[in-house]
Length: 324
Ligand SMILES: NC(=O)c1ccc[n+]([C@@H]2O[C@H](COP(=O)([O-])OP(=O)(O)OC[C@H]3O[C@@H](n4cnc5c(N)ncnc54)[C@H](OP(=O)(O)O)[C@@H]3O)[C@@H](O)[C@H]2O)c1
Image 1 (tube, rainbow, N blue to C red):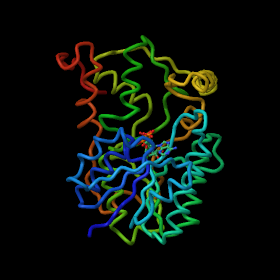
Image 2 (image 1 turned 30 degrees about the vertical axis):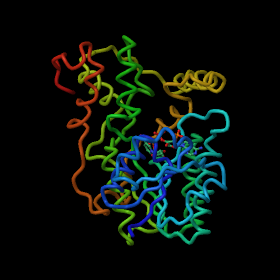
Image 3 (image 1 turned 120 degrees about the vertical axis):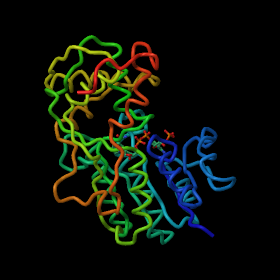
């Protein structure tokens, strides 16, 4: 029988690409999710019976143990960007990873992939980055054969980066260039991240190692914003806003979202803190090539196919300007 892989966070943006890649590779996939009744789109990624949906909350040890029971491999993609009520960075990202890795250890599971992020750092002023670093540590402590994958910002039709800034551009005549706009990013396609997850799972040489996953090009935040606005044919003015001011604004919005359940902050103080550091693959890091992946999808080949909906006349709008 083919391997059974339990995926935590399989219902999320990147998780769906991972589930699809696992199905294509013939694995049996168990998606551990808080609301399995909402996961019918996951079921159809495989043949009948290939994808199993089980209820689990990464903050609940019993549900995590049940989800891992009988699995040959575990993938943890769970994270949050905004803290809300019980969903804290420490509880969900750090201790969630602890519970999953403890359960894997108890069941003797050696194949474990932890999705982290470039910038994970115990000394960071960002609570997200600290929780990500603590999660890496606890996973490796419990399952030393685990592979850590740290992507840069991830793009794809359902992303929360290009789509978000395109949506903001639709509303505002002036776009804030956070911290002056010079922070660097190396956007990577969600499908390429999923390919890396599969490659790491299949390759025993990847066990115990950390890989940083960046796309083929590096851009400053300013370049990304200008690219988005050219692609959606909405030229805007720009204003350089210092990190401190943006962080204050983000902090206020974040505070409001903690008390208003359905309000989502476009960005939080913590995310502004993250943007103070370049989000690119470090020089000595292992990466896609070390996982045998040499061809990556570029932003320019994909983003216009899903950003068109933000143009003033949607798909009927001729792109007036070539991307910068
Ligand atoms: N997107 C990026 O640009 C980016 C960049 C670098 C690293 N990453 C990392 O990649 C991973 C996936 O990111 P993403 O963009 O796909 O995030 P996402 O769309 O927000 O998905 C997060 C997933 O976590 C699940 N989750 C949250 N809290 C949970 C809990 N208490 N118990 C069980 N499941 C829970 C969500 O399930 P529900 O459906 O129940 O909410 C969802 O499936 C994360 O670890 C993230 O840090 C992402």
